[in-house]
Image (cartoon, one colour):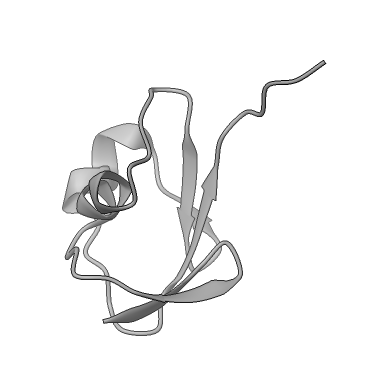
Length: 65
């Protein structure tokens, strides 16, 4: 299905938000996620079903100095 992830359209096979993070190789407990503008807490990601055309935001801290 096609989703918009952080502003870019991508074709993915994951059915849940937790599966999407694995598919896109996001790791760590410090990620923040939202589906169609609604924050999805970490413990609800595996229950968060994705639908065609969803807008997903994945935020992670950046390192640098």
